Amino acid sequence: MEIFIDTANVSAIRQFSRIGIVDGVTTNPALIASEGRNFREVVEEICTIINGPVSAEVISLHAEGMIHEGRLIAKIHPNIVVKIPATPAGFEAVNVLSQEGIKTNVTVLYTANQALLAAKVGATYVSPFVGRLDATSTSGTELIQEIVSVFNNYNFSTKVLAASMRNSIYVKHAALAGAHVATIPPEVLEQMMLSELTDLGVEGFLAEWNTLPEEKRNYFS
Image (cartoon, rainbow, N blue to C red; front, side, top):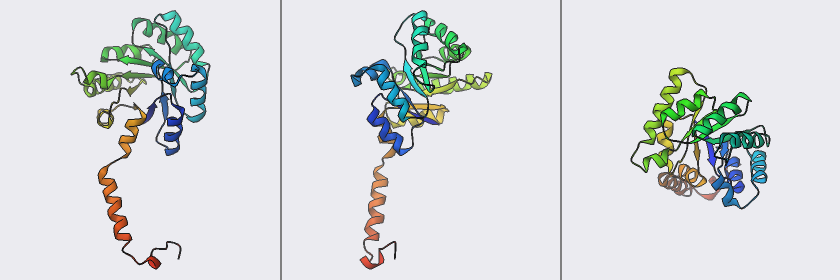
């Protein structure tokens, strides 16, 4: 499964890029706004850090505006993926942009039917919002399974990008359900790397190691 980081904070992106676990980035208007910086500057800087897909979202609610904004966003960098909401206007915009070779990510998606339509009009990714569904007593994991099954039935090339990963359990469930990608906030990526048992294990190994006389603990002699 590919891992994208869900943030517009370039410091966090640099940190996890150094570790080597991030394949791409997703942003949205709220994440960009939280940085208090110019939209284009942020997106351009992200594209210099990550050599992979970078999703940036339109803000128009009408197809014509989405198409116009999508074309402008796509010109920022070849790795740009234009995020477009799963609305009637959004499907129309994705249809036009995909025919122009512009990569798209259909976002705020909550049903397998929406995912099917997005794939039909050429979306590169669909982003089911798993955490938000679970918050309303609907299974986000089951939705991922449904979408993956539909795409496999018809050999769609569209990838399932699990979004709204609110903790590390969501990521595990998305992977088990067959999501091609999960986009994960920095704090959840931190959770995924940590385990108290790992810490205890390392402490135990080092405690045993330190029982050796100092002259026997030199790796280079």
